[in-house]
Length: 211
Image (cartoon, rainbow, N blue to C red; front, side, top):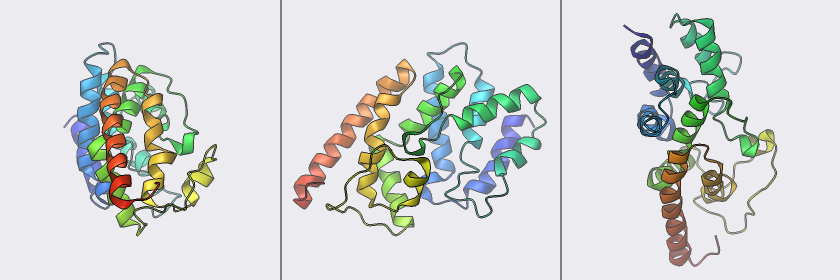
């Protein structure tokens, strides 16, 4: 069994305990996005990309029951990878998270591809579905017209306040298109961004709220 096959088996056991917004179907979609982008980036390391995609959410603090334990580290140790590959994979994963706009700059083409691939799954039709799935799992309001989207947040501020689901569009999702790092990622993101704008336009019309 090669490292990718072994990694996939191990991460599936983790993701099956997450809600529908971050389950293994999310991983499969991100992998599909990454493979589409990598076709335009022939010098990228596909093994690093695929392993980073598989691992990127296993230690997500939103789901970690024990913050002192890292599923990412545990699984990587079981894959018998070289130290160089481990460092590279961890660098890619650290570059993905939005963190309220405090994201780390991707240092490699692999990091750029995986970040773009993950963010593509956060926008468009599937991004809308995932956002409301997560909000429902957390018992959040659909929308709150009295809520003002925050700007210039710290990572702690971003993660600590439980806003209405729709507020998340203005605090993160609508901002992602401008942060895409690859030409193909940007191209794909623009279409999905336009769909979100149309969704929000229709939602305002149906609710009669300035949201």
